[in-house]
Image (cartoon, rainbow, N blue to C red; front, side, top):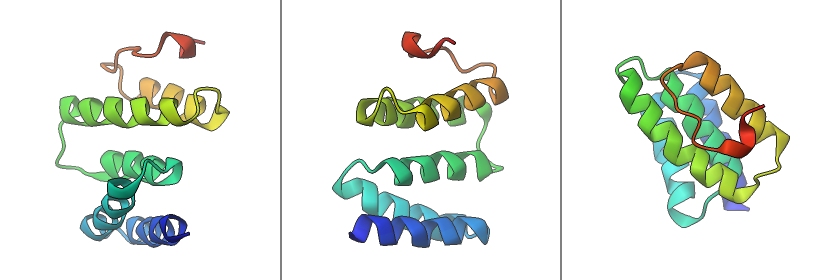
Amino acid sequence: DPAVAKTRIADGYLQLGLLDQAEVYYDDVLDKKPYKYALFGKLRLLKSRDTADEETIIAHAAKIFKQLFHLGSNDTRILNEYKTFKKHYPGFKDIFPMSRN
């Protein structure tokens, strides 16, 4: 599956700190279909960008989480990532009532 390969390439670029290259690969995957692991990568990428202000990060993260919850609302990894994100960004509103625990 090309989505898996491209997401792994993007993950590698992200690990190397090559954020623009990582974004190109994540976006290429996500332009074709919503793929959970590319969305997780976009979240990590978003948190890695020093230039983004908190409001911008929160706005983009809300869009990503909506897609993730649509893909698997009962996925514990998504729920855990969501809870972790809320702890790091107190301004992030609880947009998904099912995850208030």
